[in-house]
Image 1 (cartoon, rainbow, N blue to C red):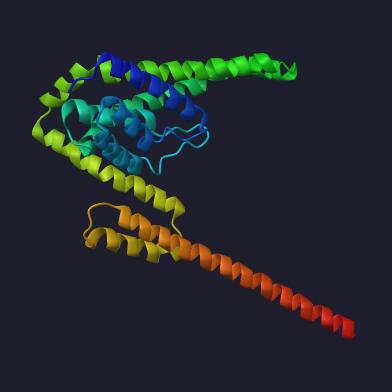
Image 2: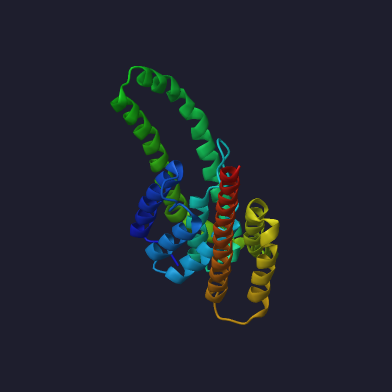
Length: 267
């Protein structure tokens, strides 16, 4: 299916908004699960956007910016995964692998801006010394505006202008290469989730991980909502146990202090 000019412009506007959010890290609407869903809404295929968003979010779950380092760009990954799946008819798992070059492209552009924007620091320091808040705000708005326009232009060129070339490229790919992208796209969510677990997982939570894995793998159900409900129940159990333990510790400490006071009064 082809993307119309109006849809291309709408995607560019959406990319500007979520791109600024990614630059400022304010509302976190730049996450792939949101970006893919919004892209699906614009393209008129919400189920495709939701499916692509779930897979891409898992793939990017453990990739977060830290200081000056930049992971592959989640905005372009989300937009282009949905766009490629929509225009070429490929499943979202294959589209993830095909969308990675666009994600890397935006990653390098952002890294270039990180370096080049250092040229503005001299003026920023000067405005700060002079307590010129208006000029400092204008300077920040200028750099943010450059990033925003870049997101819009890149998404418009990749999603609308280059769609025919992209479709031709995908159709010209041999079956073994397309299948390779499909396998890579299927593995990426597991890799992303594994990277997230490496940071977040604690030894005492391993039994819950095993329990969730068994439920998700061997209990037949039509969607993941039951697993989410079980996870919420387990989280509430852990939360209530920790809260009760804290209350018991406080009560025990208060009782111990009270006994100490009585002994001191007796002396």
